[in-house]
Length: 171
Image (cartoon, rainbow, N blue to C red):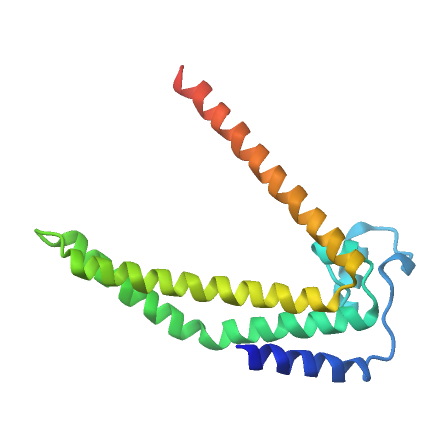
C-alpha cells in the first residue's frame, strides 16, 4: 500500500509539470450556484472541505492523484470484496440457522471481519497522512479545526436525537 501511495505521490509530482492552468474558484464569475459548481467540477477544482483550504494548483493536483489512486484500488478490488461479503453472509446465515451456535466458527468470522476493518482503517489513515503531507501547516490546522467542528456537530446531533427519541417513548 505504501508503494501505491508513493507511486501516487510521484505521479502527482510529475503531473504538476503538465498542469498549464487552473482556474481559481474565486475567480469565476458565473451567477448561478449550479453553474458555478459544474464549472468547478469540470476544471478539477476541489469540492467539500478541501475547497475551504485555499489550495494551490500544485496541491490540488497532488491531492487529486492521491484520491484517484485510492479510488482505483477500491474499483479494482470491488468484485473480490463483493464475493467475500457474499461468502461471509452465507456463513452468518448458516450459523444463525444452526440448531446450536458454533462459537469457534463465530470467532473465526469475527476475526475475519475485524481484520477487514483494520485494513480499511489503515488505508484511510494512510490516505489522510498522504494528503496532510501536501498541505501547509496552516492548512493542516484549518483542516483539523473543520474536522473537530464536524465531530462536535455530530455529537450534538446524536444528543438531540436521543432526547427526541425519549420524548416519543413517553407518549
